[in-house]
Length: 112
Image (cartoon, rainbow, N blue to C red; front, top):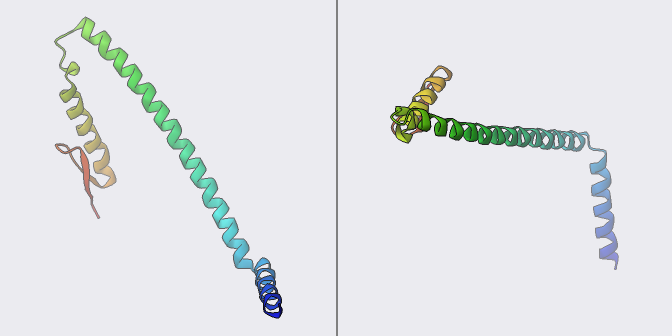
């Protein structure tokens, strides 16, 4: 029983000392800040995803209208649209220092 009592006292002393530790309070505040920032980033990503879905819906409607008005339009070809998209991505990322492989459709590096 004496061993249990001493173990309990040691745990109490440990937690009592930790409660007053300024580093612990700073880490708790830092963790809370990170959690808040993560939630804000997740919310922004949700809004971007929904906006992208809306853009896809509008694009589908525009493609249907284009197909009815001009069935020979090169914009109706999915491969042509994908190539245009990849070229735009490459040109938008280049000034930011990234290299984008148009054929593979992926970032291949960053200029240092």
